[in-house]
Image (cartoon, rainbow, N blue to C red; front, side):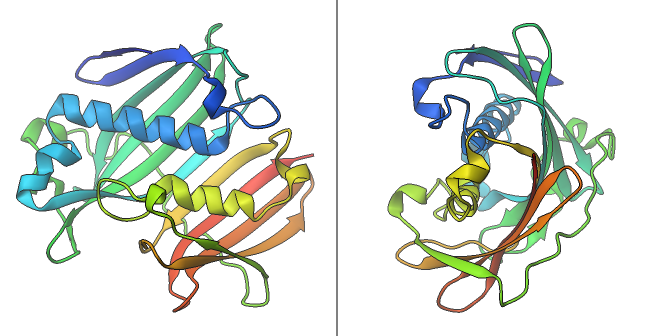
Length: 252
């Protein structure tokens, strides 16, 4: 995989590996989220504000929410280009934009996410200026992002439980962001996901969790004019604490 970057845009090109495709032969949604996390981490490292750089200050990056628009999922061995850039919002959110293209420069996916910087000792968000150089705190609000909350399914929604595994853990010592999407998708039927028909995806993270605990995925489905909408809440199975809200629109 080839990676290039400058002060504004970070770009990587590659081919969809076999390990990243599902049984339909196309890139898995969870793999897309991982690609976004990877390029964001590489860009942050190039700017000197990655998790490794901030660890001595007892500060960590925590994702707050994601929005994805999927136009087409690339197939196994297909060439892709992923581009990413960032800007602050309200001096508190690190907003990052992602765009995935095929080799004909046709867009496959567009995504915007919001991260916050958290004090590891207090668990509270801190201003970006506390850890980032002044030039990275400019252009505030230059990447628009909707902070609308995701409605949650009722307690009577269908549920499915999953064990949090050690392999779900990341550098921050909690289940990685992609693990929540993995559980959400596992709670759907294969006919809804293969071939993958997700067109819009919103994820709102509230709290984290780690092993050996379990999560409970609550799912409701409703028919829409163009397909199906799934709304999910992922809660701690033992306490009921809300961990993540997810909403996805699937085409017919």
